[in-house]
Image (cartoon, rainbow, N blue to C red; front, side):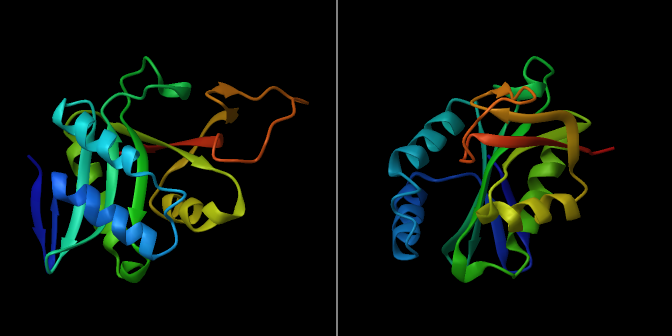
Length: 176
């Protein structure tokens, strides 16, 4: 069970009630079609099966955001290398620009540091992810050098692909 108190913020493991709280908040901010309740239910299930770590930020009893961490990458260039992978980070719109995403990630990286010297993340490349791209670069994540990936495989030179959530660049951070 994860539990950290940071000023007025609590960072903890996901609770079952968080599924509805996050889903309702996402729908209210217009993300309903992008964030499916089943995804949140799957995160909770995987957390309880020790397949995924969930770091949920709560402020004054209200969920603010979360980070998910797979202890071993399931795909991409770090598959079979036992390097943990961040797979989802979300901070609700009304809680953005308050440092909450950084605080959640600080805790996730600290936990990860106890198991591995590295942490990885795959970042989509289209403009909606621009803030996310800058966020990770400011935090010391660098491209791993394996190039573009699409649908879980490297994109070869001259190959055509679609610029959607499946077109990613992998980043890695040295936690030492």
